[in-house]
Amino acid sequence: MIQSISNSDDKEYKTHSNLYNKFRPSYPSRIIEKIISLISPEQRKWALDVGCGTGLLTRQLAPHFEHVLGIDSSEKQVKVAEQSSETDSLNITYMRADSDDLEDILNQLSIQKNDVSLVTVAEAFHWLDTEKFLNNFQNILSRKCHLALIGYPRPFVLTPSHLSDEYFQISNPELIERGLSEFDDQVSKLVDKFYNLVRNYAGFDWSILDSEYQCYETQFQKKFLRVTTEKMAQIVPVNLFEFYQNTQTSSAYNRYCIAEKKSKGENFTDELLVLISEVLKLKKLEHLGEISHTCEFSDTEIVNMKSVCFNLYYNIFVWYLSNCE
Ligand SMILES: C[S@@+](CC[C@H](N)C(=O)[O-])C[C@H]1O[C@@H](n2cnc3c(N)ncnc32)[C@H](O)[C@@H]1O
Image (cartoon, rainbow, N blue to C red; front, side, top):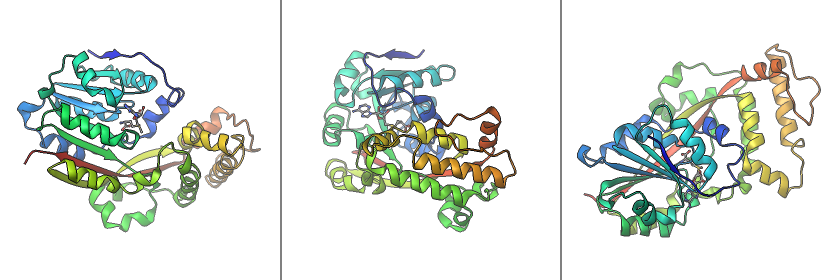
């Protein structure tokens, strides 16, 4: 049974939660296995996924616990999470709630504090009042409860040059087998351009993610007995049409356009459409012809754009924090 307790609305994810769900990486199974291994089987009653978004991690945790609670401050994200989990997870509860209200949330759902053995925060810790969150975690939950903080900086396009990199060979040996496209270098430049353009409009200080949360290390060391960290790459295959859609619905890009007083058809979108045209011409597919600011594509153009695929790679890092020996 999926339960939800929702009571407010939000702007950020209102229009694009479904696309968000597609574009974000699910978390590598090795990370899930490691998190689970920290908790003895008899203690796996409740896991709490804070800032659960569309439920990517919540769903991955569900098979390992009696119950998983995903909370998020965005009504829209919670709705998409519920729809995505409907068919496959019977032990997930989603709730629209703020991380600051941890105690009220547990009381409202009659969850015993000692029954919560894991709290996860994936790509969301940097959105929280971190000091308040860590204090709540320590004051409210059992000392045996583990905290896993997961994050990743902006993704990059995997290009042939990465294949000789030992890091990729170790974390994703299957990539060596997977064919890369001759357009990867071109697409890579464009993806770099996009993230450089929007990095100051993300709504948080992007250097926190670039630092892989090293900036919080002193705070972690002060509060926890055990602080360990690890990192691995996760690959998300996407195509040019998805990338195009993702740029157009990105809240950071929209904020950039408003701040710079640019209509969406200018600058980056134009460049993106030129690149798409060039790639399609090189592929000897019907190209887009005149580039239009309204960007309405025919069905054939969409099919062609979808045929140009590339791999985005995410450098995922995890901080494991606990007071258990
Ligand atoms: C980048 S998303 C990550 C979502 C998901 N954990 C994932 O891995 O895809 C960050 C999420 O944190 C949520 N969020 C931000 N501040 C929050 C808060 N104070 N309490 C609860 N959720 C919050 C946002 O609504 C958003 O869904």
